[in-house]
Image (tube, rainbow, N blue to C red):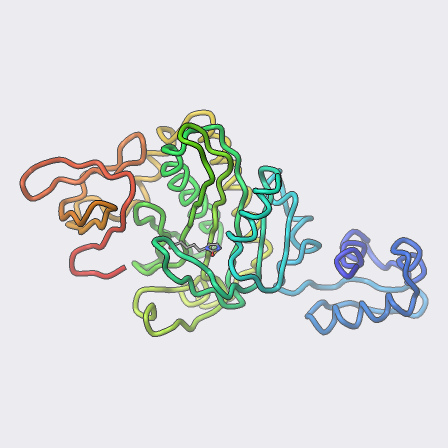
Length: 321
Ligand code: BTN
């Protein structure tokens, strides 16, 4: 109900009377007043005039549907599921996808109590971050999903770049870095048969408006706020990210990774570096040569052999990321 009331306030160009809202929402004028009080406590600036009613002056940095929906430009984010706290937005999105939720569905939480990173790692997800998952239904075999993750991380970098002073680089396969520190990442999970993906859930985590980290990632992580010195408007950022994600996703569905290869390589900080790559079959050490047209990482090993990796965890020798 509060979301519907917020929507009314956002839609109104100026004042909207308590009587109008009470009629439209089917609640008493007293109940309208109570909801207005709660919204004020949550940070909404709402003017009240005995004769004219209520007028929304400013919205807080909260990812409510009523705040984000008017900012959305395309189909991603519809439907939009907002929760204050979830174990993991990916888990909720997977359950929704399993029960038939359409492509473009987004699940957002202000905080995650069991946020997950790649390779089963815990993902620090306090309030102030941007934690969301997107349901996709690409008509592709599962092997193509690695390059989809690359394309989505490129979209996330492009979305973030709209913020002043922010220009992320990408660490293969899909870490977003600022000044060499991790500012965000993508965890893509799928349900599939051998030759067909049923659905993919792309979980995107951006360290936005917070500046302290647990000791184990203190040296390697950063946030938009820590990097630029100011808080970002998360609803606008989410809308910019969803627009960029949708554009890249649609193009990837038509043409695959090749049209993105040059842009990915421009942001790619690993070319020419000596790295260790933890792969499902063991660790490889080598020199990063390129990213191929399928999004694979090309390494030259010490014995001169060339390897193409479709997945893995890269550590630049002498650095820990
Ligand atoms: C990584 O770099 O290891 C991937 C991190 C992905 C984190 C996001 S936050 C939203 C979604 N829900 C999760 O539990 N994980 C992803």
